[in-house]
Image (cartoon, rainbow over all chains, first blue to last red; front, side, top):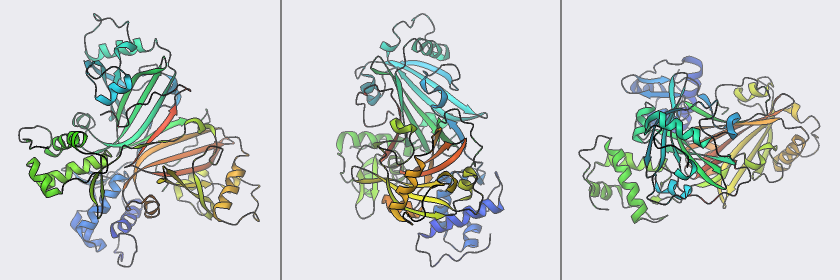
Length: 254
Length: 254
């Protein structure tokens, strides 16, 4: 990597170091390779360990590095593009082609914000489906899908009381409604303990939270709160109009 | 806030503390209010300062707190929903209703990933527009929009050589092409030094990076790389089919 003089740069030192490290990753390391330890790296670039650590954190944010306990810091593979919306944009969850797997279904009082959006009243339980999504065998997202009881009035109580079978029954009933539209919102969040476990992350790891509101009958019939791994995922919102997409670069342009 | 016993909890301490703090923010603090200092907070909850700091970091990730130099830690206002795509989804940048403001335009060799996607060849300069976006008077996003020279062949060289006027000329030429589709991707990133300055953040702050590929003539005619503040923004991808959206909760459901 060679030593680089970082003294006379107006940007914060860690920022410049990040750029230098990033170029070194491109030219000298391959995916999965373990980086030298922090002490050696700091010495090599003539920076304090604190500066090095800040630069490594940046690269982790950008998905270039993965830090794993007991392994060390490795060069991350390119992020995986995960379609959110896209061609199935006008379908209910659980429609043909949906890549989510139902895991469980319970009847629970939702968070206040969900109750307000569903207009169910604060103490009223709603169908709470837990679903998971994998990509290439790796868990990439965990979802809580809240369905108002009023949205699936014909759901049979004797069908399946809980579990994945119950989740499928709720989704089946949901398909009966005419979907008038949906709206996605993406924001930064930190992984809840249960999601973190499912996603193989520590609680509090940065995640991308996608909240989807499904509209039917002029109101919100269901709300999905999906938690995607921010380190490995790039969320794609497609509308390529059927144009064949020339395979672009895996890395984001920056 | 009262003292809470955190000893016998299976989750990481900082995580549980985060939940407790979050509830305290809801019930005892108002937006903009400055939190007590770290020493006082740590004492109050009977935790080490390191644990407290981890919990504060989580809350910052979730957009509940803002930490500002010289001010301290304040309770953040709810995130602002910023439309990405939505009704103007089928329009070129710069079309009527576009909320971005052109700032500058230069002819530059783009990053390798952009050149590959635009199929311009590695050393070929492209029109590089800088645009900015504000919401309620606050900067929320900074964009680099790359337009291949071949996409705007009739652009007059004598028009305006650079600056915002040049940017508008490029956008005007772009409108002549038939837009066949566009594809958005969202991922976590860290703010580049120039973007950070424009967004009033420190370099390296977490940001949401939206990469948009615009398709025309069966190829990628332009690429936008937009950097949104992750602390204050929630990106919305609309497809509500014209349904009037009942005003939901400002906070994300979690």
